Length: 390
Image 1 (spheres, rainbow, N blue to C red):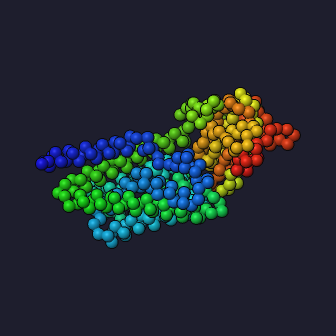
Image 2 (tube, helix red, strand yellow):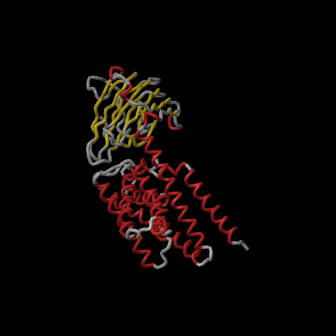
Image 3 (tube, helix red, strand yellow):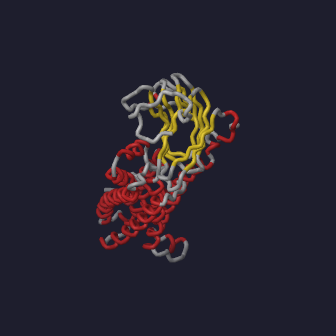
């Protein structure tokens, strides 16, 4: 039989191990949409949005930690329903409103604040306001609504990374939100079963103390890690990287160069093209490159992040085949491509914001511009792409 000191040590070891696994793993920086999700959603319907919402919540450790803190000391169905509904109302309002109006903010900052919200709920659980600050705590119900608004903003920021449909935007948002609630309820049931089973044991008081201090530690570390990620986005020039070709590039050689465009003299570029992507719209821009040709490029927006796919289509192909070199959601990108086949090469951009976005594209190399009418070029096959191309 375990003595009280041994039980305390065991619980502490388990809690610390779980925290270390979550916080030191690569997923701890963010639980954003994968590139596969972004591409699948283009062809998927509202069921796809619902599925992504559910899986996003179930993998959203910060949201789940917050919900876990909310229900920790609630024992009646009425209280659980009241406080969980308050959180649901809060995050649903901002999820729908911010996404529908294209309101965005740096997701690292949002996730940093969400990390602090986990600290807050755990600090309130241990009665920290009275114990350490000697003040009465704020009204918990209203605080949960307010913190829920912040969580909803984080969910909206993630959702806006997807290529949303302008024609059925509201339905897409609602489907995603329904998925969020399904995921939340699924996780909530499991949490309640664990807490209800443990509440009957003598070790629950020790477990609750360790769990809430663990939540404070987890929230604090999440805050620091997200702020570190924010530094990478606002001071990108300080984190110069070079990426080798991914497996998708096969025999093509692609090198991404993360460096400031203003360090390059404008006269060095062969062409500078301005491209406008309409609000909630998409567009392609292509260049013709021969086999073995080299293209150097750099493009940027006014700061608005766009989903893009940098790819190539072999000349004469009638199957619709294309090869992707890079897919991401960014406000700028640059690199060098050496082709392994002749054909049209370029970018597909998707603008999920509520305003048009202007892209300034700089290119240099061995290419021909498809947008100049006086050039006779090999045109892509009719079924090579489903996007509007310049």
